[in-house]
Length: 394
Picture 1 (cartoon, rainbow, N blue to C red):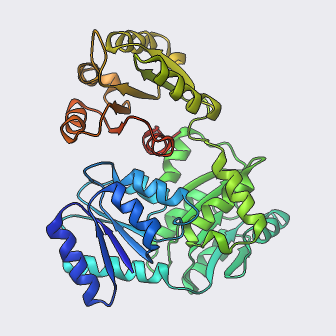
Picture 2 (picture 1 turned 90 degrees about the horizontal axis):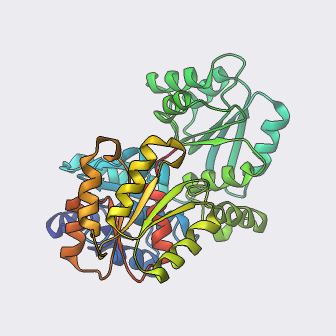
C-alpha cells in the first residue's frame, strides 16, 4: 500500500493512477495532518510526500514520521517543487524528485520505494582501521536481518562497494591510505561504485569548513563520544528502514535514549515574542529542560530591540524566533517584516504562533517572511518537530 501526501488534486490523481497501474493500492491525503493520521492508521509500505502542504511544511511531516517508532521504517520519497534536498535526506527521505516530473522519473520513484520497502536482509559496510573499534561497531549494529561487514582501509571499502550494494556505510575519517574526504570524492567519481547513505563516525573534532565539505556527501555526521553508540544505532536503523518493534530490546532502549535527548536545542538561544504570561510559561517549560536558552520579548518592538542589541554582542545571537501574531504596540506580522528588512536577519528562522488555524492568517505569516507557523493551543510534538526542522545546523 502506498500513501500519497499531496495537495495538488490533479497531480495526486496522476500518482494514484500510476500506482494502481504498477499494482500498488493507493490512499491520498491532501494535508500534513491527514497524511500523518493516514500513516499511523493504515501503516502503508511506502509514502510519496510533497513539501508545500496547506497546513505544514512536508519537512515537519517527515520529521514526525521518522521520530515515531511506528512509522520510522516506512520509506518516504519526496516529490516537490521546493528543493529541500539536504534537510530531507538528513531526516531520512530515500530520495528527492523535483516537479515538474516526467513519467520516467516517477517510475524511478516507485522503483526506489519498492526496493527500500522489500523485506530481506540489509547490508552495512563499516570502515574503521582500529580493529577493536571496528569489532565493537559491528557488534552494536548486528541484528537478525542485518549483515555487517568490516574493512580497515579506503581501498578495501572501494572494492566492496564495486562488488556489492550496501544499504548504509559507517566510516571513520582517519584512515591509513586515504582521508575520508578523498574516499567520498572517489566514490562520487567512480561509476562502478555504489554510494549508499554515509554516516561519518569520528572522534576527530571537525572545523566548520571540514563539516561543510563532508556534508556535500554524508547523510549524517556523528562525532564519537560517550553517548554516541545510541546515536549511531538511531541513524543506521533509520537508513535501513528497520521496524523498531522487531529489534532486540536493548536496541529499542538505546533508540529511545537517543530520541529523548533533544540535541537540536542544546545551548541554542530562542527568542519567544509573546505577551501572554501563560504561553511564555508553557513555552519555557518545553524549551528550557531540553537545553535551550529562552529570551523573552513582550511585543514586536522589544523583539527588534533585543535583536539589535545582539548585533553588537555576538554571544547574545538568537538562533530562532517564536513569534506570536496578536500583540500590543507592534504585532507579529509587522515585527517579522521589519526583521526581514535587515540583511543580518534574512536567514533567521521565524516560526509564527497563530491564535487559530485560519488559512488566511497562515498565508499572511508566510508572506510577511515567517518560515512556518503553528496554531495555538500548541501541540508540543509539532512544536519540537518545527524546531528540529528549522533550527540552523551546526
